[in-house]
Length: 295
Image (cartoon, rainbow, N blue to C red; front, side):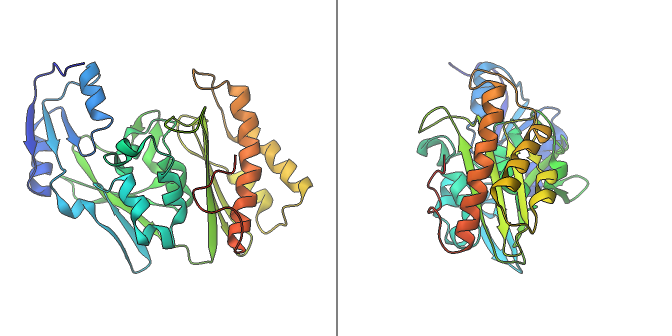
């Protein structure tokens, strides 16, 4: 399908130019990976006045760690996250999640920032960034903003990003306690597919947990009631059963082409148990290798 819309195309030279173009044009869109945008242009779902290409801005491609803060630039692809020594050493569930995103070809172009800007319920990045308490760093005419991840997603395909802003990157604090984690993704088959349910878990050495579900509500769902129930408790079968019962209160899955709501709810409970067990096993030096599915 050809792109029939008429629009200006600008390959930005610096951030100031991007901000200026966002102010100048009423309907401007940002092109980075383009895996979502190109499809929207082809189908006519968006009708921009200008497409601002930021792929040439090298400072947006940084992955760096300093002062116990991880920085992931807006231009960093999922393949680059998978290959990063920093990510694999300090944030392995980011790499684990990244390996489940679409296909190699898509991962070579798609970015984590683009994933959270699309804000579709089945995105994979949202739950992981939630458990890491990430902040989204934006820039625009009013200057830089730091938006906590829990305030970023405001609805299906809706974020806290202002119309005249650009996301520069993602800031993630290194947890101050020994920890491990697990990313679990349910899909219809092995290979390229969107999530029916996904789940990110961090387990700490004081037996506290952070748990976030995705693809079971319009936005990622932090399972605070489950966390409070199991924090600093030994996960015996009786406690795990109670935690699984709380899943029904925390998520609101729907029936669509990929799964029924009943199947999603059942599998979310299975994924919670297996994800928690894998995270604890990894914390203790065992468990499945990162990237090996637990379902």
